[in-house]
Length: 321
Image 1 (cartoon, one colour):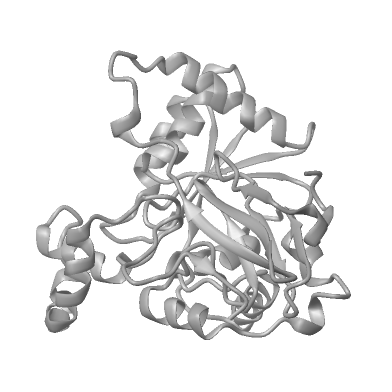
Image 2: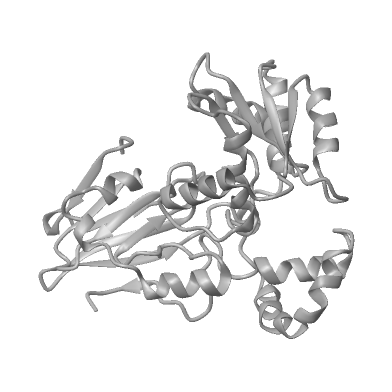
C-alpha cells in the first residue's frame, strides 16, 4: 500500500486478510465504521484522522485508556480510540461478511520465534550489517544531515556499526547526558569517535523553563497516539538543542518492552506482587543498574502489555457487539 493512501473495504471485498509489517517499519491502521459496513485502511494514521467519514466518529476507548493507565502501553490491535486498530509485527486481521455486516477476527503469530529457527544456520554478521545499512540508505533524504540517537544499547550501536562498515562517515550521534552515575554519554562518545562519527551530548536542563514547557505541551498535542513512556519526555528537549528540520533522524533507542519483547509469565506475576514493595523504590533507584533490587524496581514500571502480546483474558475476536 502506498504511503498516505487510504483504502476502503466493503462487504464485496470479503473475505480478506491483512497483515502487519514484517519488520514493524510501517504499522497498518484500520478504522471500522460504527455501522460495520466499511473498514478504512492506511499506513498513514494522520490520513485516517482527517478522513471526512472517520473524524466525526472518533471516540476515546475505555479499554485503551484502561491499558494505558495500568501498564503504560496499549497492546495491539487496540488503540486509544474506539474502532481504530493497529497491526504491527506478527499481527493480522481476517475480515469477513456475516449477516450484512463486516466482522473482524484479529490474531497474532510472531514470525521470528527461536523454536522455529533452523538451528543449523549460523548468523552472517556481515550480511546483517549490510541489510541494516541498506535499510537506512533506502529510507533517508540524500544530501541532508544525518543524526543517530545513540545509547549504550545494542540497537543504536549496531546501526552505527553497520553505517561504519558501509563506509558512511557523515553522521552525528546524539546521546542524552544526565550528569549522574547512570550517564551513558561519555562511553557512547568514545564508541562514536572510534567508528569515525561526530558525537554530541544533549544535557538535561537544570530547571524547567517556559520554553521547555511549551515544547513539551506541543509535543504531546502533536503526537498521533498517546505515550506515557517517561523516555519520550526527552524528545521535545532534543528539539530545543538541535534543529532537526529537513534532516534524517535515526532513532536507535529500541525498547524491548514496547517494541516486540513478549513478557514471560513470571513478569506478569512480578507485576502483581511488586506494588507491595513500593516503599523500597527510593532506595533501589540509588543503586547501580546491575543490582537485582534496582532491576526489579525498574521492572515494576515497565512490565505489562507489549506490542503483539495479548495479556491474559483479552479477547482477540471482535464482532458487531
